[in-house]
Length: 267
Image 1 (cartoon, rainbow, N blue to C red):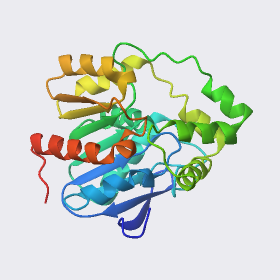
Image 2: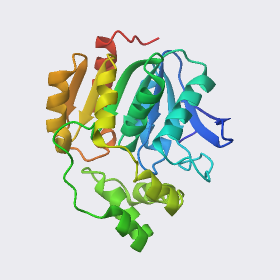
Image 3: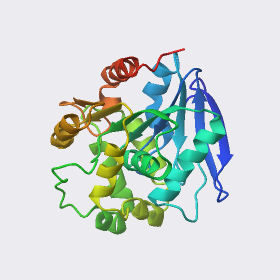
């Protein structure tokens, strides 16, 4: 992240891993949790826009971004505990949790393990929530990583976007992803819970939920909207997996409107 996107901060987790985050703005806190092996700075558009009115915490999970490479803990319960300890570290009684991709599962695990007492609202971006229909993927991503970590990662990064980014941007993001050791990266793709775990988590909370997705998850979104009284679903038809980058202005407006409807006011 650029120097004008807030202060570099860190804290030590209860298992002695240094976890990094960027802290920008003031007001109600919004915590941004990136996806598999991704750095916090991928949310730079959101930090710039939202920090005018909110306190924005862009988090590097363990072994990602500028956080310490950890020897262990690359599983959902530990990462959920990291989120709980982050909330303690920033001194907030209530936060908006925004999880993208793997961050969706981390946020839902947080709800399962720690409840929603300190969560004002939940924003889940482009991953399964355990609803029907299940994902349809036959590609052996773990096998591809084992065979060619570098090439697979760089292809994956480019595939996250429908709107072209610069070669410098792709390289910077792929280089950041490759900082996560291969064993940890594979552990993060091997979460040991059934789909029902995530579905139970999302229906266990009555907090307002925004589910922002690409068409792959649109049917899950329909089921969520039908069953959850506080859920709002938005489908980004022309965006890639990193939809908050592809359509940053639209996503930021959507988030602003969602927070306003949820009664979560700017400073």
